[in-house]
Length: 539
Image (cartoon, rainbow, N blue to C red):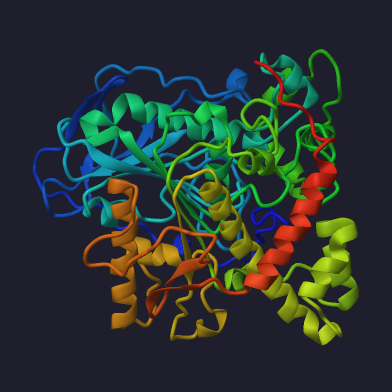
């Protein structure tokens, strides 16, 4: 149903993201040095042990500025001498968000970070590459401090910036015409692909194995990974995927130039780009692109803040050749093992939008499911205004659960293993009423919590287990280990998931009947729109 990422609001509270990243402590008088294809890097240390090494703010592509704005990323230029990699690079251009403590941003932002505990080309450790969440409009590589904690468990950890909002997902007919692939709009996804290419060429001296890369993302980061799995351009670039609270194939997504009237989509990618261009005072003409590329990023963000046109990953005929729903349905996605799941109470921190009355609720369902809205209402009924909030939140939570369930079914149908989880842990302190909210699991993965978190042995055990499952999966393509509760791969004949909460146990999927209603509605929508979507364009 409605995609989960375009409606992340300023009131979103993903608590772990607000925490400052731990400072790096020197454990040796000599800084770590590594020689890469592009030059020599001087790194830093993230702990007292000499082998706890980080390289921060490493450029993986040329700056996407001036004539390279709204173009596929170009390879990073080589440098002379030794480049310091001891501080995070600038975040990508974005508007302020009330839920996020923002560092300085710059349009020159294509940097990544590496944490390793074995700086040796012979180590060949598995690599986890993390793409952050934030609706593809906010966020930055270091906002979830996963690197130090996970690297100590025997993996190399990488996090990367990618272009966001109108700088990263701006489609426009003039850009489409300029492109040799007749495509525009998915520059943020192309950045992620470039980061993976850079790792294939450079991760070995940093202790990583380029043939054992697991991509991992939360919320929009998970959505993007799903999009990469639907992209032929990602073939061979990663061998496993971890998708937390996000995916792309359970609903229709925006098309670059074909209107869609379901799943809350309005207009096309190119139409959104034309609207922003008009707001910037740039109309069609032979010099339109030149003018757009001379407008400052600040001006672009200012205009965008007024019209709030949505910019996100889309079907463009090249990066994403067709609707991911169709690609996954036909088993043409990348065939890699996967961990995928959702949190029990995702929506409690995502804001309530303007859906407060029965009339608003029905209007919302109409925008989502069109002529099938009555079926959705019957599955999530409200008799009066007083019922709306509870039903609306339940529906939002189930959208996430359905997405994880749906992608598990698609991967299993393609004879690939999917490990489905359901995160249920609720805090005991003042946020207990929020339940297992969107992004909470990231604190357990990073082992970095809010200062006022009320710790107990339950969250220690859960954190240890989640980190073990995730790193075990990166090492072997299977999260199971001898000291862990058995996690069976998803089986449509059994319909189980692994509950990750105060207890860790394989159990039946919750709300199964309602998830099946959502699946039935989407099948009808997919069948209805199958003949109206553009055919993939040839390169």
